[in-house]
Length: 150
Image (tube, rainbow, N blue to C red; front, side):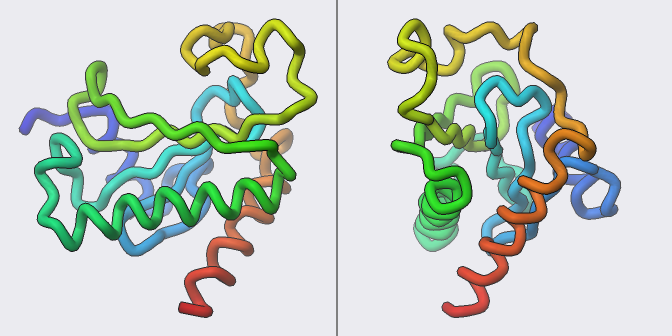
C-alpha cells in the first residue's frame, strides 16, 4: 500500500509529534480534525493502517467500530451535542479512517441538516492548541476514563 496522509498521521502519533492527537485507543488513535469545520470534529485512525474497513479481520473490525461509537459517546458528553455524524470513505486518502462530527441543535438553520462536506471547510479554523487544547484535554480525560472502566 502506498504511503497516505493517514500513514503520516499515525506515524506522527506514534512518535508523539502530532499536536492534535488526543489519545491512543485499542484500534488506533483519536485525533482532532485538522480543520474544525464543526466544533469537536475528530478522526479515528487505525494502527496499523489498512486500506479499508473490510481489510480488517472480524475482531479488529469490531474493535474499530466499537472505538468509533465510544468516541461518539464521549463527544456527546463533552459537547452536549444533539447527535454525532460518522463517515468512512477513504476515497481521497485510500486508508481506513473515520470522521466523527458532533452536531449541535443550535447550528444555523442553513447548516443544521447539511452533511459536513457541504460546509465551508476553507473558512473553518485550523486545529490550534490555544483554541482547542482545553476541549482536546477534556475528551482525552473522558476517553481514558471510559477505557479504564472496561
